[in-house]
Length: 187
Image (tube, rainbow, N blue to C red; front, side, top):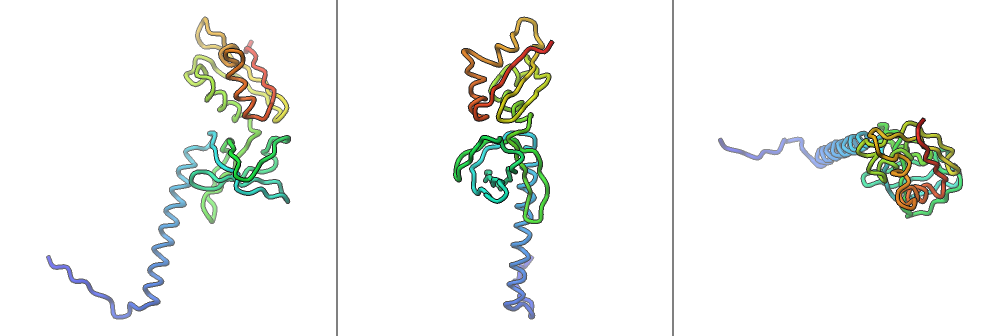
C-alpha cells in the first residue's frame, strides 16, 4: 500500500478557507451538544457559579457555570437578595433547552425543590433515606415549613434535620439569606 498526497487542481485559498470554516463550525456544534448533555443530566440539581452580569433594566442575573452560562430571572430571585459581579452563587437548575447559541439554562433561588436539595446535601439521614421529606411550603425570603417523617423506628426526624444546636439548619438558613425554616414532624 502506497500513500500519495495529492492536492485537487481547484483547491485554492478560498476553498481552504471554506473547509476551515466548516470544520470549526462542526467543532462548535459538538461542544454545544456536549455542554447540553452535561447540564441536561444535572437538571433539578443545585449548581454553583459566579455572577457575570446584572441587567439592571430587567433585573436578570447572568451566572457563569463551569461550562456555560445560565440566567437567573428576576421572578426566580429571593426578593431581599443583592448580587455582586464575581460573587459566588448557588441556585437550582430548573430548565435546560437547546438554543441557537448553545444550551439555555434557567436557574431559580425560589423553587421549593432548592430547599429539598439543600436539606439532602446537609442532612445525611435524608440523603440515605432514613428520614423522608413529605412536604415543603415556602415563601421565598420569608419563611419555609418542612414536614419530615422517619422511616425507621427510634430516629427523631426533626432532631436529625436541625442538628446539634441547630448547626445543620443554620447552614441552610445562611444559604437562603436568613429565611426562617420550621421543621415539623409529619402527622
